[in-house]
Image 1 (cartoon, rainbow, N blue to C red):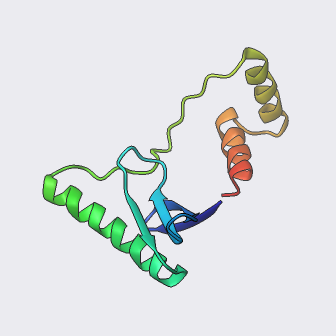
Image 2 (image 1 turned 90 degrees about the vertical axis):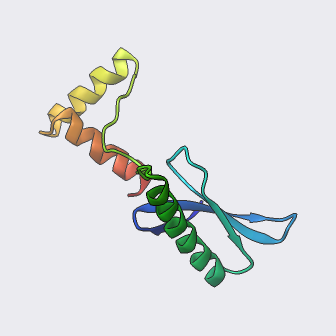
Length: 110
């Protein structure tokens, strides 16, 4: 997956074969913010403009701009997975939260 990041917003970039353009969409939010361009340099500019336009529009409407993530995560996993994760965390000398954050960061390549 190809991504761009600007002002803490990340967008996925794909190639639209039908229209022969690069297209992007902000990830991790319910508001739809997309952009497109013919080349990579123009795509980055269109991405940054889309983020700035989104933030300006939210401000004009008196609406809070969506953040891509709050940092709070509630998961439901099978009890066996929960137990195994708890044991792995304790074995590494970490809290379950610290261990899970580290494992998720590694899995997401963050």
